[in-house]
Length: 176
Image (cartoon, rainbow, N blue to C red; front, side):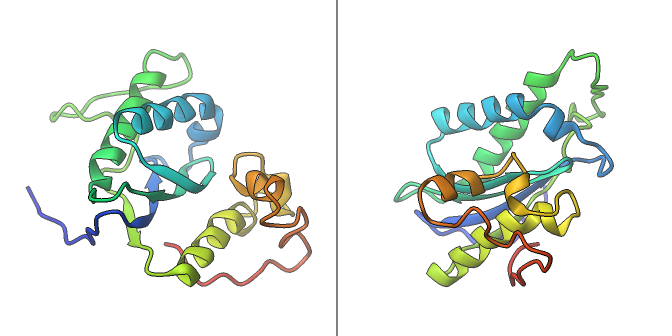
């Protein structure tokens, strides 16, 4: 097995991107409740905080803050992906097949990871997460995308409802 070079800092925060194998699929928004259950299952078995998240049709971006002394985000991602596959298995609108290794044809094998280095980096990635639906042309205003932690940031007073919702999207230097 290949040993990928990944940043591993205990108690750190990471920006992560999980992507479906079929980039033309809308599986994640169609099965957003099941993904939510998979994320909660992951957090129950391997505690962590998710300070920001956006769910798009074929991928999800999130920030994951790990507990002190813990650098294992990979097992959390593996648990989340496996839980989601279990949640949607047997649904009429999903054709899940296993390869020779027993892996489902739902998720891309790997994921994107970036160690958050400081508060400025954290803020840039929160912005990137929230602007992503606009970047992908899914909405004209960030506030119109329902599947985002943006709305909890607005409720908490951390962002105004009209943040980056005008004709010109904000320039955000972070992400994939």
